[in-house]
Structure formats: C-alpha cells, structure tokens
Image (cartoon, rainbow, N blue to C red; front, side, top):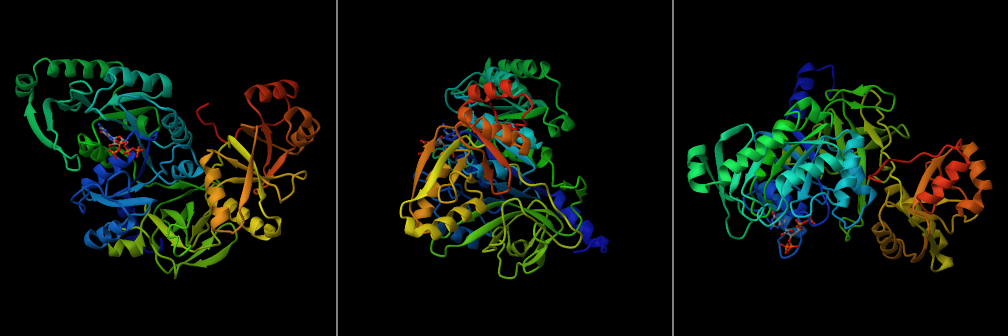
Length: 537
Ligand code: G4P
C-alpha cells in the first residue's frame, strides 16, 4: 500500500478504526483465563467457551485450537486472540499469566491501546495488578476496570471503588452497578439507563452465557425489593463523588470506567466487551524516536514486542511478534529492519493470527503478526516499508533479582556463550557483564525470579549447556553515566558489586536495598542514578 493511493489509505484508516487491541492485566487467580474464555464466547465465530487456555480440567490444548481454527476461522496462540464483535476486530493480546513478573508481561503493554484491569471482588487490588497498572499509566494506556467474581462473597462495591481512588489515584466511574452484594448477585443496572434492570440467571456449568432478562424499574423493585433502590442509591453516591464520564479524561488515564460481573458465570461480560468497542481507542499515529508520529495510513511499520522460542518444541521455532502500527502487512512483503537498515523477507514467514484466511495474509494497524524464524529480529525492533520509521526502544524494566550464571561444564563454554547471548537478545533476562566477572560468569538480571527458571531450563535443553545460578544479594539497579561510573567504582566497597554493563551499553549499578541506595545518594548527590522505569514501589 502506498499513500499515493488515497483509496487504499482510506481503507487502512477504516480498518484501523474498527480494531481494538487490548490486554487483560491482573494478579494470578483473579480470573484472566476465565474472562478470556468468557470474552471469546461472545465472539461471532465461537459458540462455546472453554477452549482458550489449557487450565484445570478445561479444554484448551493446542490441537483443540487447531481444530477450532479450521472449523471457525479463529486463530490463537499464547500471544493473541483475534475475534469479531459488533463489526469490530478485537485483538486480545495475552499477558503471560505467571505467578510472578517477567519483562514479557510488561512489554506486551507496549503493543496494546487499552487494558482491562481485572480485580477479584474479595481480594481487591493485589500486588501484580498494582504494578501492571503503574506500567499502563507510565505508557499512557487507558484502563477499563472489571470487578470479577461478584457471584460469590466479597467486599462492598463502594469500598472497592475507594481503593481504586486511593491506592491507584485514578477516579473510578462506574458504568454499571451491581444489584445485590457480592455473593447475592441479582443483576446489573447501567449508569446510563437507571430505568432498566438486567437480571441474570446463572446457567449451571458456567461455560455458557448467563441468561439475561431486561425489566423496567417497577418490575425490578417488585422482584428484588430493597436491593433495587439500594443499588440506585449506591450508584448515585459513587457517581456524585466523581467527575462523571469524560472520554478525554479516560484516554488521559485520569478516570477508569468500572464494570462489575462474573467471568465464570459470564455475567456482565458482554457489557465489558461493548465498552472495549465503544470506549477503547482504535490504533492511532504512533510516536517515533525522533518525536514525529507515524500516521496509521502511512506504509507498513510495526514493532517487535515479544520473541518466543520453542512455541512448538518439535520444530524449535522462534517467533517474533509484531504489532502492526501503520499500513498493511502482507505476507511475503520485503520490510526493512530499522536497527540495521537491512531488508528482511517475510516470504517464509507466517502470519500467525487472523480471524479468517484473508486476514491471515493481510494485517492492519492493531493486528499482531507472528514471523517465524526471523532470527535477525530483536525485541524492540522496528520494521517498515517506504519512508523510514523507528519507534523508541521498549522500556527496559528495573530488574529486582540478580544471579551469576556459570556453565556446569566449562568445556561447553561456546554453547554457554551462545545460549546466554540468545536469551539476552530475546529479552528473557538482561545480561550484565563486568570486567571482574568476565563473560564466563555474567550477571543475569530479572524482573521476576521465574525468568531464572526459564533460563535454567533452556540452557540445559536447548543449548546443551547446563548452568548453575548463584543468587546475588541485590534488589535494585540504577543506570549511571561515565562520570557516575568512576565514583561508583571507587565506592565499590559500599555497593559490593562493580559496575555492570548491559548489552545495549547501559551502565548499571546494583544495590542491595533502598537503604543502601539512599545512603549512597546522600553521600554522592551528584551521581546520575536513573530508575529504568518506575514500578509500583
Ligand atoms: P487466572 O487466569 O487469572 O490465573 O485465573 P483463572 O481464570 O484460572 O481463575 C482462577 C480461579 O478463579 C478459578 O478457580 C476460576 O474458576 C475462578 N474464577 C474465575 N472467575 C470467577 C468468577 O467470576 N466467579 C467465581 N466464583 N470464580 C471465578 P479454580 O478453582 O482455581 O480453577 P478451576 O478448577 O475452576 O479451573
């Protein structure tokens, strides 16, 4: 496609405008997999839930998906799910659901235009939710809140909203209100139409949409008694204390629309999906490293936000996931990698996602493309056609866990170096070197300790170089400059670790804890020490 052709540019704009690319952020066990299934249930092409993730007794192994893909034209991998809703194309990008953090989770948020913050009604705002929320805020990603598990006992709705306001410092604006407390959930009233009650009847099994019956206010009161006026009063109270709905404030991250429901019994999920269509922004011009914006109707440009190896262990493949930011991606096209200026053919690459065959070959802004075995690609790379595009590098997140890696068998040092460098390129961990330790004993830095398990496993099974990891007593990393490096090197006795260098040449100083960092800062107020990104600490 070329901007010389206004008809095509108009078509790209139109396709972009009907795309919604979003992720679900939550603490483990809040119900992300269940919600994903419930959302997919509403998709035009799927008729029963329970096939998205292979958890518990649910269906969901890859082969089921292969069958589903063939039958229904839906495509999914662990990275994204594409489906249709109300004439829109929904791209739900998966945030890995580990029990701890990984940088992958954070990077995914660079690829979406909106996030659904899923909150367990009984547990409220848990740690990982808070951290992920702070990443959304940092990246300017608007957040829609869904308070889940309302079908069982939990906290008061007003209390949960207070937490959102006080802890996250974002104003919750309820779009619906629950009739009946958590545990005695009768239905919902929409803030925009308080004359109507949506009563739900739970369908046993939970993998079907709950039955919904709309009734007017008089009928609601007749059926639910006091619960109905109580819900209206609470809704009024919640709305009165805030600024009210304002789309601009939502996009600027000042307010979050709030929905209540139950993913398991599929209550309130359709309203949530409608909100993603109605409220979430469609793909828009993306800021480049030089400060200009790449319009969506410009020729193709995309950003590599995730690289995943061994999705199919039988083939040892490595997939680079690209979010299309502008123009059209067509399978087989030649694209340029901004970092090297080299051309890259996508001839043998596959588009991994797509609601149907035609979309599998052609992707529009907002869509996610998987390029198989494009080994030259790195996380954060920009690919483009035509006029040069280079998006800012993806933020590197402040690692909080550190360990020295050594090969178990020093005769395999070549495999060791190759493996470590590949894991570095994929962004599995950040690899830090120092003169003292040399490249046979790099320091691996991770946002979450589970990244180390991945490294241990892959080094042994993929690179045939089993390693030992020795945890280091640091929990903070700060970026400094050459002048700061001198001071830090002299103060080595204070910080313990010599300065380390990351593969992008950033100089990182490691500190044991905040107390040690603060005491160093007090003694050396002029030394540059930058946080990589503020998480919720
Ligand atoms: P995750 O991906 O965020 O980790 O959470 P997941 O969907 O696996 O849900 C965690 C547990 O919470 C599951 O129960 C799930 O059934 C339950 N759950 C999710 N949404 C709701 C809801 O709306 N209401 C209620 N009552 N429960 C909900 P589990 O017993 O751990 O697993 P399973 O055996 O049901 O799969």
